[in-house]
Length: 226
Image (cartoon, rainbow, N blue to C red; front, top):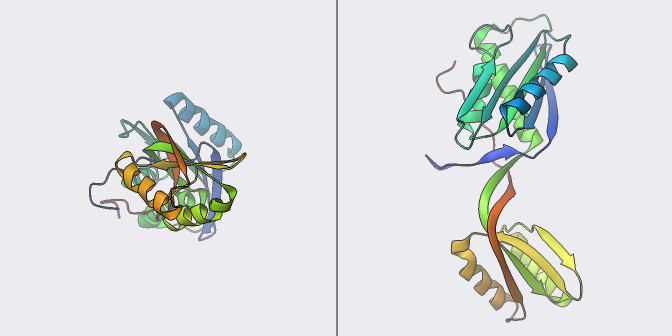
Protein backbone atom coordinates (compact mmCIF):
# COMPACT_ATOMS: atom_id res chain seq x y z
CA UNK A 1 0.00 0.00 0.00
CA UNK A 2 1.41 3.38 -0.95
CA UNK A 3 1.82 5.92 1.85
CA UNK A 4 -1.38 7.95 2.36
CA UNK A 5 -3.23 5.83 -0.21
CA UNK A 6 -6.92 5.72 0.65
CA UNK A 7 -8.56 2.34 0.35
CA UNK A 8 -12.25 1.62 0.78
CA UNK A 9 -12.07 -1.94 2.08
CA UNK A 10 -14.72 -4.03 3.78
CA UNK A 11 -15.79 -7.66 3.92
CA UNK A 12 -18.33 -9.31 1.67
CA UNK A 13 -21.92 -8.66 2.84
CA UNK A 14 -22.04 -11.75 5.00
CA UNK A 15 -21.38 -13.01 8.52
CA UNK A 16 -18.20 -15.01 9.00
CA UNK A 17 -16.51 -16.89 11.86
CA UNK A 18 -12.85 -17.74 12.35
CA UNK A 19 -11.15 -19.42 15.31
CA UNK A 20 -7.68 -20.25 16.62
CA UNK A 21 -5.97 -21.11 19.91
CA UNK A 22 -3.27 -19.20 21.76
CA UNK A 23 -1.74 -20.80 24.87
CA UNK A 24 -4.84 -22.92 25.44
CA UNK A 25 -7.24 -19.95 25.17
CA UNK A 26 -9.74 -20.11 22.32
CA UNK A 27 -10.17 -16.89 20.36
CA UNK A 28 -13.21 -16.82 18.07
CA UNK A 29 -13.75 -13.98 15.62
CA UNK A 30 -17.25 -13.19 14.40
CA UNK A 31 -17.37 -10.39 11.87
CA UNK A 32 -20.07 -8.77 9.76
CA UNK A 33 -20.59 -5.89 7.39
CA UNK A 34 -22.83 -3.15 8.76
CA UNK A 35 -24.73 -0.11 7.53
CA UNK A 36 -25.79 1.37 10.88
CA UNK A 37 -25.01 1.39 14.59
CA UNK A 38 -28.24 -0.49 15.19
CA UNK A 39 -26.96 -3.36 13.03
CA UNK A 40 -23.67 -3.32 14.94
CA UNK A 41 -25.35 -3.39 18.35
CA UNK A 42 -27.73 -6.15 17.29
CA UNK A 43 -24.81 -8.25 16.03
CA UNK A 44 -22.83 -7.73 19.24
CA UNK A 45 -25.84 -8.66 21.37
CA UNK A 46 -26.51 -11.79 19.31
CA UNK A 47 -22.92 -13.04 19.48
CA UNK A 48 -22.66 -12.21 23.20
CA UNK A 49 -25.80 -14.24 23.84
CA UNK A 50 -24.60 -17.06 21.61
CA UNK A 51 -21.24 -17.15 23.44
CA UNK A 52 -22.60 -16.26 26.89
CA UNK A 53 -20.48 -18.96 28.59
CA UNK A 54 -17.27 -17.34 27.35
CA UNK A 55 -14.99 -15.34 29.62
CA UNK A 56 -15.02 -12.31 27.34
CA UNK A 57 -16.83 -11.05 24.25
CA UNK A 58 -14.68 -8.12 23.16
CA UNK A 59 -16.01 -5.99 20.32
CA UNK A 60 -15.33 -3.07 18.06
CA UNK A 61 -16.89 -1.47 15.03
CA UNK A 62 -16.21 1.28 12.53
CA UNK A 63 -18.89 2.98 10.49
CA UNK A 64 -18.70 5.53 7.70
CA UNK A 65 -16.46 6.05 4.68
CA UNK A 66 -13.86 7.70 6.90
CA UNK A 67 -14.70 5.85 10.14
CA UNK A 68 -16.73 8.75 11.48
CA UNK A 69 -18.13 6.38 14.13
CA UNK A 70 -15.71 4.22 16.14
CA UNK A 71 -16.73 2.13 19.14
CA UNK A 72 -15.12 -0.62 21.21
CA UNK A 73 -15.36 -2.54 24.49
CA UNK A 74 -12.76 -4.56 26.41
CA UNK A 75 -15.56 -6.57 28.11
CA UNK A 76 -13.60 -7.20 31.28
CA UNK A 77 -10.12 -7.57 29.84
CA UNK A 78 -7.53 -5.07 31.20
CA UNK A 79 -8.20 -1.61 29.77
CA UNK A 80 -6.59 -1.04 26.39
CA UNK A 81 -5.56 -4.66 25.79
CA UNK A 82 -8.47 -5.92 23.71
CA UNK A 83 -11.03 -3.60 22.11
CA UNK A 84 -8.54 -0.88 21.19
CA UNK A 85 -6.08 -3.27 19.45
CA UNK A 86 -8.98 -4.70 17.44
CA UNK A 87 -10.11 -1.20 16.46
CA UNK A 88 -6.55 -0.26 15.48
CA UNK A 89 -6.33 -3.22 13.09
CA UNK A 90 -9.52 -2.13 11.30
CA UNK A 91 -8.36 1.49 11.09
CA UNK A 92 -4.75 0.79 10.09
CA UNK A 93 -5.89 -1.53 7.30
CA UNK A 94 -8.64 0.86 6.14
CA UNK A 95 -11.42 -1.66 6.70
CA UNK A 96 -14.71 0.21 6.93
CA UNK A 97 -18.31 -0.51 7.94
CA UNK A 98 -17.45 -3.66 9.86
CA UNK A 99 -18.27 -5.00 13.32
CA UNK A 100 -15.95 -7.55 14.93
CA UNK A 101 -16.52 -9.58 18.08
CA UNK A 102 -13.68 -11.68 19.50
CA UNK A 103 -14.80 -14.26 22.02
CA UNK A 104 -12.25 -15.63 24.46
CA UNK A 105 -12.51 -18.88 26.37
CA UNK A 106 -9.71 -18.69 28.94
CA UNK A 107 -7.41 -21.70 28.86
CA UNK A 108 -5.67 -21.23 32.20
CA UNK A 109 -2.50 -19.47 31.04
CA UNK A 110 -2.29 -15.71 31.51
CA UNK A 111 -1.00 -13.83 28.47
CA UNK A 112 -0.02 -10.53 30.06
CA UNK A 113 -0.90 -7.12 28.64
CA UNK A 114 1.38 -7.41 25.62
CA UNK A 115 0.21 -10.93 24.92
CA UNK A 116 -3.43 -9.88 25.06
CA UNK A 117 -2.83 -7.01 22.66
CA UNK A 118 -1.12 -9.32 20.19
CA UNK A 119 -3.79 -12.00 20.61
CA UNK A 120 -6.79 -9.75 20.01
CA UNK A 121 -5.14 -7.77 17.21
CA UNK A 122 -3.82 -10.94 15.58
CA UNK A 123 -7.18 -12.68 15.76
CA UNK A 124 -8.82 -9.85 13.82
CA UNK A 125 -5.98 -9.53 11.30
CA UNK A 126 -5.63 -13.27 10.62
CA UNK A 127 -9.38 -13.76 10.60
CA UNK A 128 -9.92 -11.02 8.03
CA UNK A 129 -7.39 -12.68 5.72
CA UNK A 130 -9.30 -15.95 6.00
CA UNK A 131 -12.71 -14.31 5.62
CA UNK A 132 -11.53 -12.20 2.69
CA UNK A 133 -11.70 -8.50 1.98
CA UNK A 134 -13.22 -6.64 -0.93
CA UNK A 135 -12.33 -3.19 -2.23
CA UNK A 136 -15.15 -0.86 -3.20
CA UNK A 137 -14.00 0.99 -6.30
CA UNK A 138 -15.58 3.27 -8.90
CA UNK A 139 -15.38 1.69 -12.34
CA UNK A 140 -17.21 1.93 -15.65
CA UNK A 141 -18.84 -1.29 -16.74
CA UNK A 142 -18.10 -2.29 -20.33
CA UNK A 143 -19.64 -5.30 -22.03
CA UNK A 144 -17.40 -6.95 -24.62
CA UNK A 145 -19.29 -8.93 -27.26
CA UNK A 146 -17.31 -11.53 -29.22
CA UNK A 147 -17.83 -14.74 -31.14
CA UNK A 148 -17.40 -18.11 -29.47
CA UNK A 149 -14.22 -18.65 -31.47
CA UNK A 150 -12.68 -15.48 -29.99
CA UNK A 151 -13.76 -16.13 -26.43
CA UNK A 152 -10.74 -18.17 -25.27
CA UNK A 153 -8.26 -15.57 -26.54
CA UNK A 154 -10.17 -12.75 -24.88
CA UNK A 155 -10.57 -14.64 -21.59
CA UNK A 156 -6.86 -15.42 -21.50
CA UNK A 157 -5.96 -11.79 -22.17
CA UNK A 158 -8.29 -10.53 -19.45
CA UNK A 159 -6.93 -13.02 -16.91
CA UNK A 160 -3.27 -12.35 -17.67
CA UNK A 161 -3.84 -8.60 -17.43
CA UNK A 162 -5.63 -8.92 -14.06
CA UNK A 163 -9.04 -7.75 -15.23
CA UNK A 164 -11.99 -8.93 -13.16
CA UNK A 165 -14.88 -10.46 -15.10
CA UNK A 166 -18.10 -9.31 -13.49
CA UNK A 167 -20.54 -11.24 -15.67
CA UNK A 168 -20.59 -13.59 -18.68
CA UNK A 169 -23.61 -14.24 -20.88
CA UNK A 170 -23.76 -16.91 -23.61
CA UNK A 171 -26.21 -16.20 -26.44
CA UNK A 172 -25.46 -16.12 -30.17
CA UNK A 173 -22.00 -15.00 -29.04
CA UNK A 174 -20.38 -14.29 -25.69
CA UNK A 175 -20.94 -11.07 -23.73
CA UNK A 176 -18.37 -10.38 -21.00
CA UNK A 177 -18.82 -7.47 -18.60
CA UNK A 178 -15.67 -6.00 -17.06
CA UNK A 179 -15.22 -3.02 -14.69
CA UNK A 180 -12.61 -0.61 -16.07
CA UNK A 181 -11.18 2.66 -14.82
CA UNK A 182 -12.69 5.40 -17.04
CA UNK A 183 -9.23 6.90 -17.65
CA UNK A 184 -8.02 3.53 -18.95
CA UNK A 185 -11.02 2.74 -21.16
CA UNK A 186 -9.50 3.98 -24.43
CA UNK A 187 -6.32 1.91 -24.01
CA UNK A 188 -8.39 -1.09 -22.87
CA UNK A 189 -10.54 -1.02 -26.00
CA UNK A 190 -7.53 -0.44 -28.24
CA UNK A 191 -5.66 -3.45 -26.83
CA UNK A 192 -8.65 -5.75 -27.31
CA UNK A 193 -9.28 -4.44 -30.82
CA UNK A 194 -5.66 -5.27 -31.67
CA UNK A 195 -5.96 -8.70 -30.06
CA UNK A 196 -9.11 -9.64 -31.97
CA UNK A 197 -8.44 -7.74 -35.19
CA UNK A 198 -11.45 -5.52 -34.60
CA UNK A 199 -13.92 -8.42 -34.39
CA UNK A 200 -15.44 -7.13 -31.18
CA UNK A 201 -18.17 -4.77 -29.97
CA UNK A 202 -18.05 -2.65 -26.82
CA UNK A 203 -21.11 -1.44 -24.91
CA UNK A 204 -20.32 1.00 -22.13
CA UNK A 205 -22.46 1.31 -19.04
CA UNK A 206 -22.60 3.91 -16.30
CA UNK A 207 -19.88 4.36 -13.72
CA UNK A 208 -20.76 2.42 -10.58
CA UNK A 209 -19.26 0.94 -7.44
CA UNK A 210 -17.85 -2.55 -7.84
CA UNK A 211 -16.67 -4.93 -5.12
CA UNK A 212 -13.35 -6.37 -6.23
CA UNK A 213 -11.35 -9.04 -4.37
CA UNK A 214 -8.52 -7.60 -2.29
CA UNK A 215 -5.75 -10.10 -1.70
CA UNK A 216 -2.99 -8.15 0.05
CA UNK A 217 -2.00 -9.10 3.58
CA UNK A 218 -3.70 -7.64 6.65
CA UNK A 219 -1.38 -6.07 9.22
CA UNK A 220 -1.81 -6.72 12.94
CA UNK A 221 0.16 -3.56 13.73
CA UNK A 222 -1.45 -1.47 16.45
CA UNK A 223 0.40 1.86 16.14
CA UNK A 224 1.83 2.85 19.51
CA UNK A 225 0.35 -0.12 21.36
CA UNK A 226 2.85 -2.65 22.73
